[in-house]
Length: 208
Image 1 (spheres, helix red, strand yellow):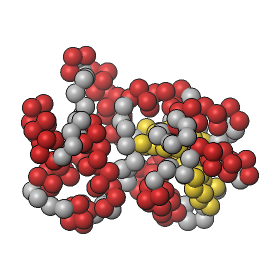
Image 2 (cartoon, helix red, strand yellow):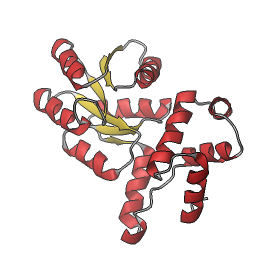
Image 3 (cartoon, one colour):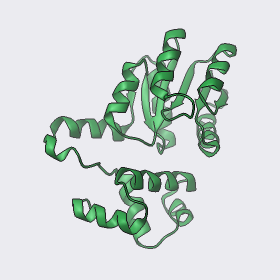
Image 4 (tube, helix red, strand yellow):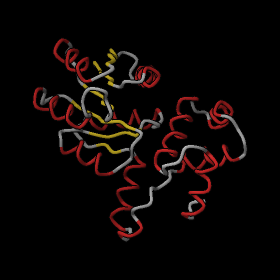
């Protein structure tokens, strides 16, 4: 099996490559830092599966998915992003995607995703499934508040205790990159620039 991972962050590329290699030790893992590199590899390699970051420097991941699907109907395409907006996930699937993962997904999620899409079934990250369910049953006036995942809350509680990223990573058996991604995602979702502002915002919303 040959897999392509496309992301413009070297740390993410290496992290995902290592996870995928540990899942499928015989697979050949290719990496690309942008849409152009991804399309070049697709033209020259018999790929089976592609992981696409939604926010690439030269092309929107949703549009790239559409381009790839139009050229390679057999290919399995999975989007991955720190963004959990259902509208983006929906656009990606409508553009020909076979699944969607959150960047902070663990090894088990990646494994389940691969096995699911290779069986021609749609895969959605568990956090996304929960968020989709919330949007279906939650009154519209409440939906405007971003949700917080179980893992994000765990990391937030430890940050509030004054623990550093490496300390949290060790305690939760995660990589420092995963902890940092969760922290940045929280800041982005609640539109704040530091931990103190984040805590105040979450208390105002009744999240903590």
